[in-house]
Amino acid sequence: QVQLEESGGGLVQPGGSPRLSCAASRISFGFDVMGWYRQAPGNQRELVATITSTGTTVYADSVKGRFTISRDNARNTVYLQMYSLKPEDTAVYYCYAKSEIGTGTEYWGQGTQVTVST
Image 1 (cartoon, rainbow, N blue to C red):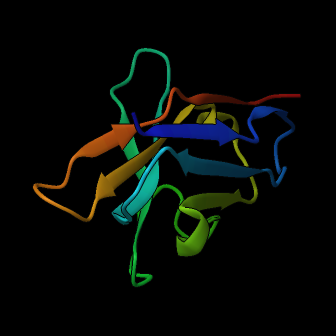
Image 2: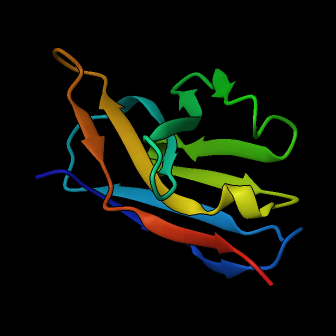
């Protein structure tokens, strides 16, 4: 059973720069796409950023210029470096990965809370 384990969340002051990490385990294949989504209370889950195995990135407009996504294909790990955090970035951040084999099974992490507050 594939597992995605996030780390790096917590309480952050406005303007802070935390980094989220997500490592996949129990896999024998790679991922075509890895990324991050987030869900704030009362809102639907939304895209934050994704990155393909060849490095093509997509960002939500709300985080462009403030967040940077990267990945280590050899370690099946994806990172989200966040800068200039705002209170509206407060959410549960979920790691996402899409298998590169077969029909592209999608996997989700359990989520890590990021709270931006003084």
